[in-house]
Image 1 (cartoon, rainbow, N blue to C red):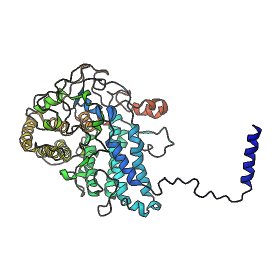
Image 2 (cartoon, rainbow, N blue to C red):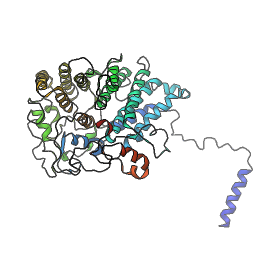
Image 3 (spheres, helix red, strand yellow):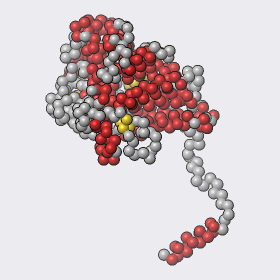
Image 4 (cartoon, rainbow, N blue to C red):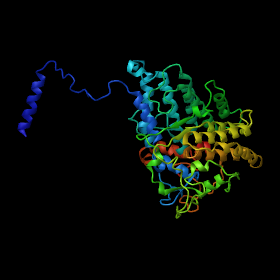
Length: 484
């Protein structure tokens, strides 16, 4: 032991005898990034978000809106109350995008290398828009969540929960700021894997997202002169335009290294629900009585029925599954389509938010849905779109446009479960019957249960989030603010 002490003392004396010690590059990592690589940060966030998979991050909402039914492990279809993590939304997704914003917001970072990755205002604008896409999913899924403090510091392990009303207002404000700061005449972000740096398309996406978000608030602000309608019309009339053509749509395009998240799941566990296939055949509980040719795109076999929904034990033998056109490694998946924009316009016209014909807009939405499926999956169903659209307008005369538009959104959004689930909670159409062998109180879930660690590690803020629910319990049948 003494010998070790003497060695240490000798080293200290030797170092103290040196007035100026230059260690040169000793502590410099030769493999570290020398300049900010915002392109990789942005592409990483987009790819991470678009490949999130598994039950919580992909499948559960498709079960709640009865696109699919389980036959092996049926707990999610029967509404178990297990907590769900939001970790992957915040880490290396939102955090990456915030870094892109922070780096580009500091003029000291505007080096030649950074500018080669896109004009700073365009990098910031795209990052802000994609942030709102992620935050919308988070707040729609849980309710009140960390927002304003979520990305400020990695040292803050107990961020406050913002109210859903304030989050929605902040998201809409963020979208407008992002849209208006971008300049299509300047270089677009090289890390943009959605539009390849086409800033004008991002501006259209921002406006189309504002339409979607404004309509999500229609329960809280139903008036044609209220907050939601005002924001809707401002985006509708903005000079940047909307996504109204297939060429402007936002899709995730996959390849061998960046794979479709459905392909990472065990397909034999999931089948189309009998309720969904019946609706597409015109036999179900929806207002539709005509064969919908989109079943040829969505199903492995349009002649097969789906699996009856909501039973603990069912067989998938001889039943239809999600089409291999969609459930495969390199199949594209939609983020925002022209069909959805037209159906949102039809929805708003029906609400009286602006003077246009819901019948024409509904027909446009259906037609665009058929056309974009043909364009992205190589099918040929568009020829039957007009006849189907005409029939649905006839149905609206009997059942009302509120129901028919909501049902058509349900079909057009497939397989985007989170968007379809948000729409169903807002409108309560289609008329879905809860699972028979339920594990909760017998209600179709209207939210996820907060992550396990929140109640123990962020107790005060967790309790505040729960108190905003109706009823104020952390259950999957409690309602978030815009759903009350």
